[in-house]
Structures are given as C-alpha cells and as structure tokens.
Amino acid sequence: MAASLHGTLGQTVIAVVATLLVYWATERYAEILASGVHGPAPERSRIFGALRHGWPMLQSSYAPVIMLLATSALGAGLRAAVFMALGLSTVLLAGLGYEAARRSGAPRAPALGWAAGTALLGIAVIALKIALH
Image (cartoon, rainbow, N blue to C red; front, side, top):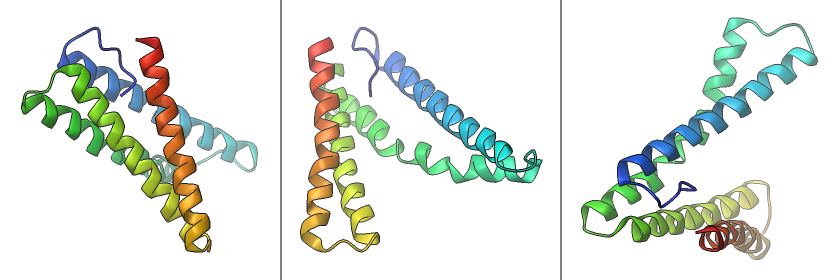
C-alpha cells in the first residue's frame, strides 16, 4: 500500500501488485543465488521449489488489497481506502508477530511484546506515508 495517492484506484492497485511482484522476485532470486553459492548450481526443481516457498509473501497481500477494493466499492475515497488497507496490514503484522513468537516457544506475555513490536513497524510505515504525502 505504499503506492502514491496521486492516481486512480486502478493505478494504485497496479502499483501495489507490481511492487509486490518485484519484491517477491528479488527475494526469491537472492535465495536461489545463495543456494548456488553454497553448493552446486540449482537445478530446475530447486528453482521452482524456491519460487513456491516464497509464495506466502504474495498471499499475505491479498487481504489488504481486498480491503482497498472493498472500502472503495463501499464509497470510501482513495485516501481513506489506502489507510484502511494499511491499518489491516498493521493488524496482520501484529498477529504474525504474535504467532511467530508463540511458535518459537515464547510465553504469552513476550509474544504480546513481539506483536506490539511488529505492529509498531506498520505504524511507522503509516507515519512515513503521512509525512511523505
């Protein structure tokens, strides 16, 4: 949702999806390249496995994009829709931070601290968006 608010809803969605695809491709390329550095050149099956392994990065973006589209369809302006999607992303970050901490064996209180910390990352993104626009 880091797309500029100086365009249409369609332009914003295209910018978000394109940005996600670029980040995904870059991150996957780095993993494939690293696997080649630490061993033999990756075979086609390992490359496709690495691409599939990174798919959750794209899947995690569905909900905020759907939020953006739904709030716009319900009559919200683009600015409000973008901030609703960013808010949902922040809530998801908090939930993922909590879940990651719990899966690593952290008790509930420290896991809530991780949730708060990851939510602060989302709040920082929103603050930067406000400051830059």
